[in-house]
Every structure is written in structure tokens, then in C-alpha cells.
Image (cartoon, rainbow over the protein chains, first blue to last red):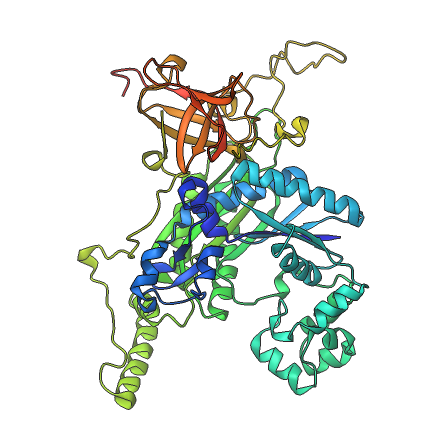
Length: 419
Length: 145
């Protein structure tokens, strides 16, 4: 049995924990630079504001009804850690997938036991962190993802069996493009093969799918049938966060070994980032010992460094990651796990951020960019694309006009309560 | 009214394992290490029993002076604890976060200040959610910093 625990409207839920007055109101969280809406409360969705909607295109009358907040990555990162800690205290194996989703391996659990555990998870996470979560249960990850979607629409916990009429009906109604792990291009190729819904993909001959598409797509077929086949790194659908976290080969206290692990993680995360054409806004490093250590106690800490400009340059990511590592590293502990999360990923479609980031990149890349820029402007008219160059002396900073306080990571920004 | 006081799901499992130092109860097998195992005293670990559920907040105002909470004090809040009567709690009262003592009176549950001039607030008919239970107060003495 696999469980997928997904935080409901995670960013908005984090904001509401510390600002209960936002409960029941339309609330949105904005991307880097306050450009567009990246998280929506149910009330905001009901107002018809789309995911990714540019703020300046929202009619002012509508905008006045909502609370639109700048992203607060420090807060979301810390709340994500708390959610995962609660999960780890309740479930045998937790596999964080993104900032707001984790898979739990519940091998040996029957549906009833799993549902009981899922309900306890919901209650405990809600109580200890204030974050509402939904839990999808199924024999495989792909099906658990679907079960989670059902759970979101009612009850908060749903089990989806591989062989059940309800599963068939669900899969038949689901276009392949909406299936987890199926990119748009793959969906188009499946359509050419006459496969347009998830059920027809499940019924397809796995070897044929492998030959026509990929091994990963073949695994998705097996997963849809209820046979676990997915390895975490298989699914590289564009995400808003990238997480690379591994246990160290053996627990170590040596700073140079941690640096090496960090270097590898950042390199891997940087590759993924560029493959999906995104830029990261912040780098978060998590360091932990085994949960229990004789004599010294357990240690678990994380730090977040915001990049001066969004970047996909491994060297800049690494510089930030090292800064974060230096902040969390304490001598005398033997560390078991080291993780890197790239946060606040901007889609490649945000041209301004991309241009800003290139400014600090290698001269060669910059020259290539300039060449492209010149060509675009030559062919499409002057000033079609302009460079928004940051001035270093002005201490260029991201616009985050309406960011909530970093309640859990800054002493001078703690939550205030009336006494 | 919608006072939410969820029960604690599994009390035993909510305390993380800590080294058993200086344990007073000597039942069963005596630990030979007990007398030899000395560690740095970690105030954080002493105060924060459940890190995932513990939050630090700042008190503003003087209504809780009688409980030793002064304006500007740091409060340690554990959200995993049950908000029993008698405990000092943080509540979201009609959207505002406030710290008061929870009491069960004949007329129903109410929030009580510990300073004259602040009447008890009955919870009946109000939108009130318990946010967490205050476990410790950190109060800096004058001249300490």
C-alpha cells in the first residue's frame, strides 16, 4: 500500500495558520516578484482567478476582494519540515516528493488499517501544524495520486483499489495528459497511438508502450494496473520545487564529507532544474542526525538562503547551499542525512526573471543571450524584449511588497498574540 | 459556538525518545551508563518536547501578568497538547490571536485573564479555535541584554 499525503493549498494554508483572520476569505500567494498567482484558496478559485494568472490582469474590483500575499519561502519550507516530522512519527517510511507532498510506504497494511492511519495522520498534522492534508491510498504511486485527487474533493481520505468498477470509471474519464508523470508531448504521442484516456493506457501492451515511448511510460502502465513500478526519480514533470535528499553512505561528522554530499545534491538538482527550464529563487539545506543518538541527542536543522537573482547556475546554487550548510552545521554530531531543496521555481515563461538571472552568468552564455535578444528585436520590432538589468549598487531585491512575517525562522518576526 | 478541542490521538507516541538521564524511577534493569553518561544540558530540548508542534510567539499586552507573562515575553507554544481547563492557551478568537487561561465555569468554557480589569470572556456563541497550549515563558530581566 502506498499513501500520498498532500497539503491542501499549501502556501495559503501556511499563511492562514499564522493569520486566522484569513480563514474563509479569498487568499492567493504570488510568484517571485509578485508577478502571478501561484497558490489559491478555495474561495479565490471560486472567484474565477486562474492558477498562474498575472496580477496586473486581475480586474481591480476583484483584486480588492482578495488578499494577495508575496511568497514567504522561509515559512513554507519550515512548515513543510514540520509536516514531514509528524509523518515520520506516524508512518514507517516517508519519502518527501515536493514541498507539500510526501509518499508513505505502507507495505503490509490492508485498506482498513491504512485508512485508520490516514485519518490519524490528517488529525495529527492538522493539530500540530495547522495544515489540512488529504491522503490518497492505493497499491501504487500513480493510483495513489489519483486517490488523493478524490480525497481532496471529499472526506480527506480515499482508498482506490486497482480492480474496482469505480477505478475503471475514473480512469476512463481521465485524459492521459492529466495523469501524473505524463508530459504533454508524451500525451500527444499516446493520442497518435489511439490512447487518449488513462484506462486505454492501462489496457495497452506494456512492451509496445516502451518501444513507442519510454521505459517510464511502460512503468506507468504497470502502476495503473496496480503493480508498483515507479522509482522516485522517474517522474520529472515540471515542479515548483526540487528536492534532492539522500541518506549519507554512513553517518559522518566530517564537514568535508557533508560538503561533498551537498555538492552532488546541488549538481543533481541543478541538472533537473535546467532540464525543466526553470530558475530557482531560494536554496534550502536540511541536515539531520539519526533520530536518536546516545550521548549527544538528535539534531535536525535547516536553513534557507534566498538568491540575489533567480538562477539555474549550479555554481550560484552551490554558493547559496554552502552558506546554508555553514549556518546549520554543528560540530560533534554524526549526520545521517543531507538534503537540498530548490524553491520558488520560476517557469521559463517568465522572461523578465530569466533575463535578470542571465546577467550574472558566464560571459559566453550572456553573449549568446544578447545575440538572441538582438535577433528577436530585429525580427519582431524594437523593444520587443528588453533587458531588465539589475544595478548592483542599488541592492536590487525581489519585489515582495506583501510578504507575511517569517514567523518560524526569525526572532524579530515572531507571531504576536494579544495578552 | 465552535470551540475545537480535538483529543490527543496517541499520547505515548508524541514524546520523542530522549536519553534517560538522571531518571528517578529505578525499576527493572538498572542502567550502568546512567552514572557515567553526562551531556551538555540542552535547554531547547528541555523546553521543546515536540519540535514539529512547537512554536515561539511574542506576547503583547499585560492581561496575563498574574501568570508571569509580561509585554514582550517569548512564549513557548506546543500545539500537540490538549487544551485542558487551567492551561494557558493561545486561541483564535474571531480571527484574532490572544493568550488567556482556559477555564470551565458553570456557564460554560471561558477565557480568563490574570490581571484585574480584564473580565472573563465567555466562549458560548463565539468563533473560537484553540491554536496551542503555552508551556513556558521566557522573560528577559532588565539589564540582561
